[in-house]
Image 1 (tube, rainbow, N blue to C red):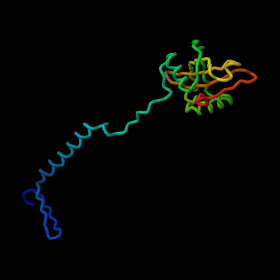
Image 2 (cartoon, rainbow, N blue to C red):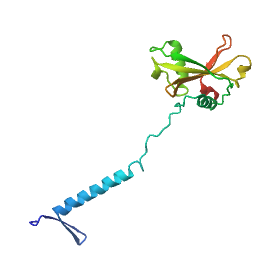
Image 3 (tube, rainbow, N blue to C red):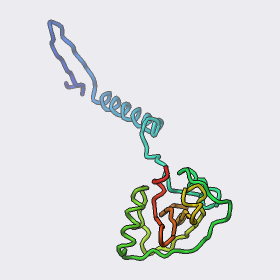
Image 4 (cartoon, rainbow, N blue to C red):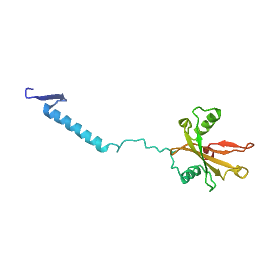
Length: 171
């Protein structure tokens, strides 16, 4: 119309609906609804959203107590003796033995590939509840890198009856 208003009409089943609104009122209404939506968005942001709050099961405090608790969660009993601690350099390229060890780590959801070229800290504990531990020493190795378990295994380094297994084997 000439007064700057918009007129909408619709006839439906014998009734006529007329909406008469000025352009200024239309703009103000759209801005008001937009402002309301922005306020709701900022006030409720995160309230209804699903965020990725998964916990890394291999993140660990670098303490003897935390390492023992991780190992014992697999049903493994350890000697009270302190662990042997040494550095372990992971090569950039894996030979067959590292590829086999990588497959063993994959059983637990770990991968050494992320640690190629890095120096890890290896903690070796003596296992006391393995059936073979009465015949030969059985050890649990944990390899840590900056507060995360990079690899873990149970081994008996006996030439005749030795073995190397994933911790998953003991769950």
